[in-house]
Image (cartoon, rainbow, N blue to C red; front, side):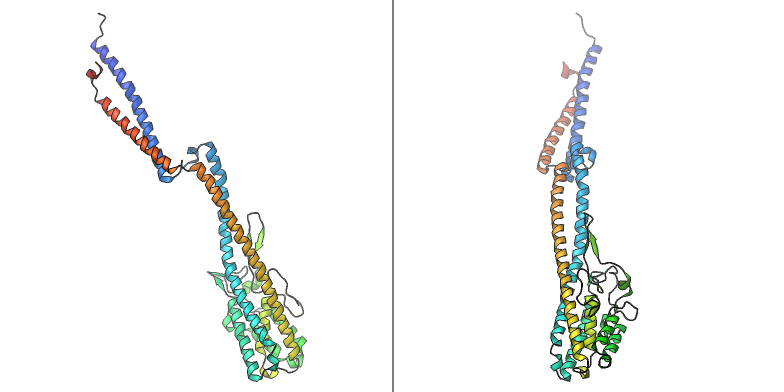
Length: 365
């Protein structure tokens, strides 16, 4: 009998049991790690929260596409921040144009009115002047939409009292001398006051008269687009009569024209120089209003183009986001199904380990 000593038998049994046990424990650990990974994926919706966990191809896709999405979103935000004030500005321009049209329509018949009727037109014009000055201080949030580069300060510091300003009183003084100085000289004096940036003369803030440039937006391709109109200067079109019957700024011309009519007295109606001065002032207001509407039209087209660009960028972001989702996101339903399968496998491995721990020598005989 060759025989095997009890010690040898026990050693053989030990080698047979602990080898498989070690392997089962290692497999169980790997299964647990997989369950943890699947649970995290189910919670976050992502394959991995690190680029390394994605794999070379998907990681390269995410690294390439994510900056494009960030750039597009930044451009969309910039456009949206710009088009808001543009809408508010358009509404104010429409109101100013309506006021100007209303005053011009009354001027054609002022010569036929009696003193009371003429006084009514003069008073209405002064009220319109205050309204225009107030509209030039229109805000979108904290932004004064006609403030140019100085959008944090009101373009017209005291619109309610513009009829008490140096701007108004100097035009009033020029109009008072109409009979003696004649229409041409009076018009020249009015234009001089209206075109001045001197403190105490201009109705505009110091910041507006010194800050250069108009509001603009730089697009993704580097193109700079003018997006605003300042209270004291045109943005896109020139005003007819510049140098003779216009300051070159339709807002200045509207304020000056209204101040001129508001400065008349009923006694001046039909007097020396009146008809010629009235015709020049009326023409100036018409030309200014035409320029205002043209500027508003260009501004509207610019806003429409920006809105369309933002919409296009939004579609691009959606497409790029889909690319990233395909690269770094998990299939939620499939992940939940895998979690269930792995949980079952893990439970089975735990049961097997528990069973092997309870085995004794008799189980192997």
